[in-house]
Length: 121
Image (cartoon, rainbow, N blue to C red; front, top):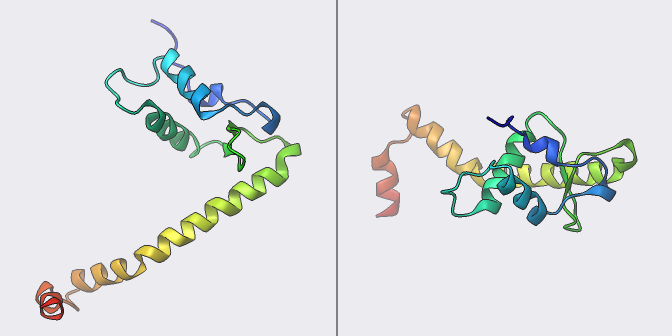
């Protein structure tokens, strides 16, 4: 049986060596990292990248060049990536703020489903 390959080993170091999404997807398919029954291999590959990001710094370039692991010479690209992702995270938390508060009220019986139904009716 062949040794299992981790996606991180397919992602090069340095922005100048970035690998495109299409190329990375093709490699993942070639190494059987994507199950045969997956209908959207690109989405599955992005899932693998996101899982690898839990333990590795993987940057996706602003210009769509692809994915890479940063070197010290890539500091500005790494900073831009961190800023973009932080902004996205803040927007996501802002968009669920009201829903989260409403859920908390329901769970602590400060607001019941009947209260909401009355407002909606």
